Length: 74
Length: 453
Ligand SMILES: Cc1cc2nc3c(=O)[nH]c(=O)nc-3n(C[C@H](O)[C@H](O)[C@H](O)COP(=O)(O)O)c2cc1C
Ligand code: SF4
Image 1 (tube, each protein chain N blue to C red):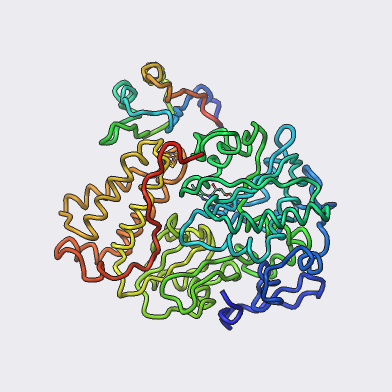
Image 2: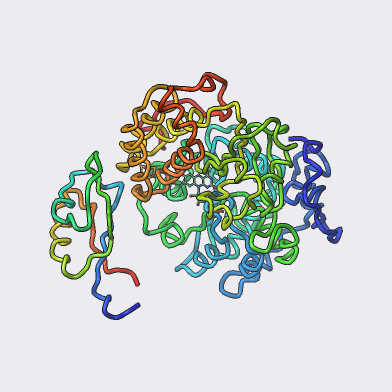
């Protein structure tokens, strides 16, 4: 794995905890959208560095802590 | 199943020594005792036939001769995913501290009867497999999970375990558990959650059970048929195992044949045989076929002309968007309506989700409803596009793979029965929707919140 990707992070969604509040997709539309019932569709779990701040905000906005940021596994 | 119903066209097994490794007629291994005696094997029959447990070959760790033998044999899981068994054994053996072994005998797939047949006819092969796997991964606990609804099976297994205890066969006691029986209560993380005192509903992963499962310990979960094969590999070795099947799909496998075959039932057949040959074990098609359901309710529809020549291997089936699943093959006759069959199964899958994730709570019921309209009522072309979009959005969006299975089932139906879809869209339901269905779909409603424990 190339060193340049070492500070990449990835999104992890706990599908059982998720209640479809939808706050995450509003704050991170580049990576997430919602289905017709308000449950997230993850278009890419890898968070490019330029979206890291948005991703942190999306994670913080989830009222049930279903969304997490993790260091991307090599 | 009867011995006579095994058809002649099965590939014959090469001759092997008469030391108990001698297979039954037509290449049977797991079921060879049955073909010899015509009755279920008790412990005396079993020990006469196979001899004592070869526990010395199952030492834990990297140099475990058993794990190496399973690896060389190329054994893959028979619970649905066809995952290489040795890889899982090694991962659990490499985990920290004492491990746990769980044998999955839940067989929640309504079209399958192979695990129940195996446990009825050769229970001690499965119990041997549990003991050997437990030794190989360094387990200090072993559990056997069965469906609470099958009291006869529970009774028989208690008797078999008591007999082994009396004759001190097992180094480790095997605990039998009766779990609530819903389609997803047999998924591996649901077993872990139940054994840890919770509901038999899937958990979010990671951690996967092999990392952190029962009692937070590394946990090996294998299907009971997988464990029975392992018990034979421990005795007769990988070269013997590979004498049946093909190089990329070695050994034998249990299949449940249903639908329009002359003699539906459970058969043992070489892996990698073309699906048409597998159907021939049950006497072949009893009438002209339109399609074959490969893998059961968790499986895929394939047009008959495509399915019949296809070798029953993970790779060949994956190329067609299918998989061996739990070895279910249902032959759909031309007179049946594939859309009606699919609609009933999707309704079953929708009622049987664990109602935890978005796709199970909303997506799957909506897909089932649209599909029912397509099969039995009226769906406009916009409705079809909506259905296709919703089917596409099920996969990969649940904590477990239940919605993925339903998505594949629906998608392969739309593809395989494309001509019927057109006909239903333009002319409404075909007369066949009023026929007796080919697939036996259990009735029932969504389990209540207290029905998972
Ligand atoms: C919805 C669902 C239902 C399942 N039901 C069963 C089952 O009834 N029996 C079984 O052995 N595996 C079942 N599985 C697969 C198990 O999760 C697990 O992969 C399997 O028991 C592992 O054993 P194997 O490696 O020997 O195949 C199911 C999986 C899913 C997603
Ligand atoms: S996808 Fe469905 S069955 Fe699987 S964990 Fe989620 S709610 Fe349960």
